[in-house]
Length: 393
Image (cartoon, rainbow, N blue to C red; front, top):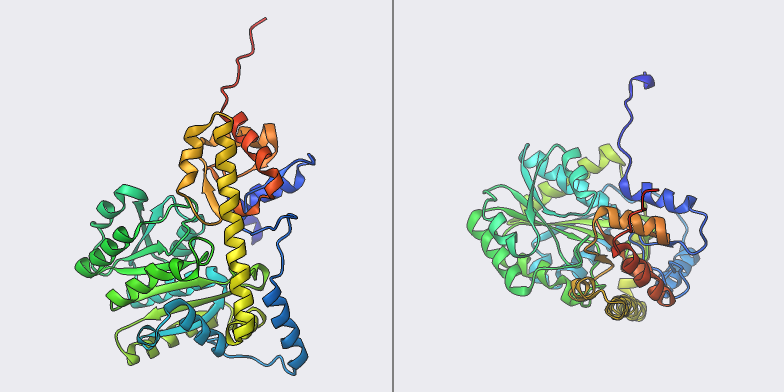
């Protein structure tokens, strides 16, 4: 049977990570995967998370199943953190998922159950896993441009379509809509009848937690239905604990009961129920005033270091005579920066300087140690240089 299986496509990010791991050069720099690293190049366990784990270990007396919706205290905490007010949370339901990826897939399955063949609009460029997740759920995918053409493209979205919007710190570009554009998007959704699907993976790492959640909350205030996928990987550092949440705002309690059951059923046939540990950690942190304050301080410090990394890279690129690249980075925010380099220039940067980013130009600015910023800037500058032709003999 297995001999009938054709060679499937490899995941481009993990394929690059494997190439990096096999690179013997000691100066190599991994900017592929979206993980935060501190000044020592380590992805740390946050102090608030570590203290919560200690408390959980001390009082743990059972590993019993939690149920199809996962950790209920975590779900309530996610509703409160993301939506902010009782007026919004009273219109919503939440189900714990296997990280943000699981939330995206469960919500995609909910859309398919509701209206098979629904068209979902994603940005171009988009997070590399958006299209595979949506198409894997049996949905049709169309694209809208980032930046100035975004609103024009989305005027073609029809009633019943779903529009996937990244709530903050757009991956891969690092460029978010401004407040006026967000307001216009809410108006378009209300006028044309499409449903926003907000992907929240980097809240707290752009302009601050509440500022990064403003657009999602505004959509919740303006529209009867909003779909939300939430990840705790980045802002709690729970990458390998796979902790996330699917949130749905709807027009009635009966509708929300149907939504929760549909999400539970989708989870049941994929993984039954999500792992408890990360959700228990987040619930413990957010329920304790002291731990929550420590977490917010750590999150703000992470955001500050990412912002400083980007500013330092801009300054070094300016000093190296690369003003166009520097200018393109100034308005970006969050973990990722999008370099205006061609795929060949990105490959050249890997070959010449052992600096690994995606062929599309994305680098993880949150993964660079501060003392390596000059090396990164020099590698970018070298990749921009036109290779000299070898003279014929």
